Length: 220
Length: 221
Image: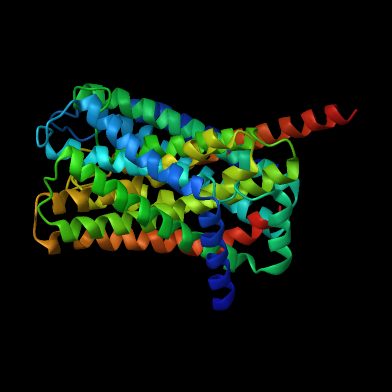
């Protein structure tokens, strides 16, 4: 029970988001209308992705300090979950863009940054696949993971702030906070972030346990 | 440390001059790529718009860089790498490789630019600034690709690996370079590129520091 609190938190928070996210009151805005509810789904995807990738890099750093294969498995599984959240983030964003900007995909810094970020992590998976030796795979993919993340930071955080963007929350385009004077969105948005991040940890935990069972079977 | 780096760069240059076919091969690679582009576009000079001219040039440089730098760890035999391992400090090795690759990229980029400007026409407004952007590009490409080449050389199928690992990583750098060179192309005031140059130098600094920190781990395997 002590180790499962975040699972309960995920279920409770997400159930609340699913219900209140759809029936709650939101500020009326031109163009956006009801699509603003995507804030509860699209934005937390990216926060969760950053959380998962952050955990992945943290495990990679730990692996280089202390080469235990367990840490490498963790790094890989966190990266996988991060990619999953990234893909869902792009899909939810794409649907939203179709109804507000009129197109599935536009050439915007934030969109391009997200796509390139995913490319980097696909490359990470392929790199992992190209080694037979476990120790070597672990070490070299850890090195690439750290190297890639350090270069992802200018791409995802610095570049979007230097250019104009259609995307809410950057390039002079306001996020949700100035509109949300009644705090009706905030009370759903923050639990949504916590809930989705906890769900990410849960998925990773399940996959790690699955991997452990798989390894035990192979040893028999 | 400095002596070690100097000796290692000396070794790289000697090795390169001893196998001249490799260096000549890379120069020929740039020249023939430029020529393929020239013929594919079937141009008389100045009929292509500036943005295309600029982008094409940087794409040629990017491919040249990945090809040239990919071999910086595969060229020497495993046994010899082991021998260096016993002699030199890994930090000295990565720094010397980066410096040497920068030098190599500078030669290739300048030769490439020369040929490109001759056959495709030269619409550049501010040549000095454009050369600066090429120099910055050579440094940036060399520093980030050297580390990636080290990573890719350990895996199987390393030509593909080199491309998929390096292209997404190099994009922030490429965007900055395209902006700087576009400003130079239009002959804008030099101050207008200052932001981009600073960002580029910052990215270079990140890459250098990371290479120095991470290479010793890579070396050990």
